[in-house]
Length: 111
Image 1 (cartoon, rainbow, N blue to C red):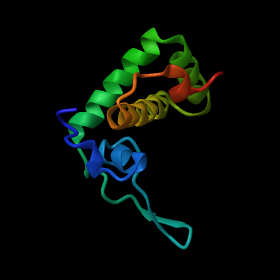
Image 2 (cartoon, rainbow, N blue to C red):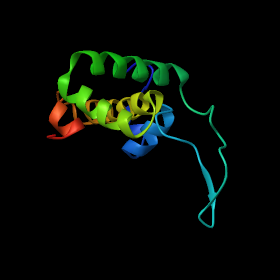
Image 3 (tube, helix red, strand yellow):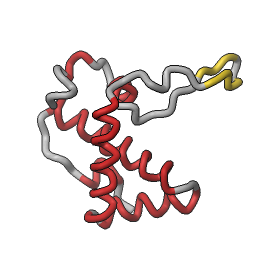
């Protein structure tokens, strides 16, 4: 919360995830990829914290581990851990915004 500041400055969860460097940066024109600009924008400390949180979540939470293994079977481990970090980031946004407790079912689904 100290790194984020006031959560109301982010209009949506996507803006917060982008600030935390949990989403890819793409520059599209007419549906074609023109480069990956602005990769260093955002808070590098939050990016690190969410990746660390994702590693611990995969290690200790069976539902998150299944999500990670499903992603890892389709891509490599780094992309899969960033997908978990993105989900954790989105959950943290709603925790701070709505002041509710973390719910693993809402964040990672029933499967």
